[in-house]
Length: 294
Ligand code: NAD
Image (cartoon, rainbow, N blue to C red; front, side, top):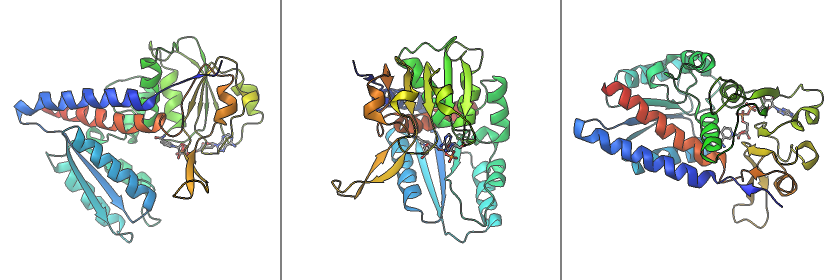
């Protein structure tokens, strides 16, 4: 029997409704959660993401600010912009859309954002808190969304083999850190594969929960998946598609049709992990505002 679909869209919708209810609860106290998104340059894909984030904020009743800066913005100018958002009481969350133009050091920008407003969870203070299992920090939105999706779909994680493919700072590494915590929605035995892994299939075939975040279309094939595994596809790549009006379609890291034949649960691309990422951004921003409110 083919795997059931893990419906990220529906779970994300529920989270967004919960966030909207949380936002409404703050209103009588004169608090409106605010998210500032900074976009440097005119990368079309980034512009689409930024627009979607702003729209989602407004839909949840949040205050949303998008700051668009020219592609030749200097490090100093961007730093000053971040300092001003750090000091702005109407802004509870700050997100700088990546990638940044070459003249700007992304690491330095991430460190400039106040950890209390770092709703992307990339600041070293928040990364450290996540690693030691301190729930007081912010967790990066994509891995946080995957963990919530597993939990709300009733996937039992404790004692399971979890294999993560990819070791980036925004997906792979935080995913590993989350799934190995001594917590009911984690407690996995975790393996991480990456571009230098010698025999990846040897590892992925052991996975009860397989999380693919390599950005390589169709990397995970049927014979790399254990029968009955839960398969989470984080990858989003554009592939040519003459039948689509845009000339392309989105594809994940998992060869969906063949892997669906052996997995028990699988996320589609699009409509799986993607919607969860935005939902968790809203959830983190609400939490930042609630915290500031005490
Ligand atoms: P990245 O390029 O920073 O990292 C990719 C990782 O995959 C690297 O650590 C690399 O070692 C590993 N890798 C590359 N080729 C490999 C191979 N052949 N075998 C094993 N490992 C390999 O990418 P990222 O930012 O982590 O994103 C990964 C994918 O997830 C991309 O397609 C990206 O678009 C997508 N993404 C989706 C969301 C979402 O919301 N759905 C969010 C973030 C990223």
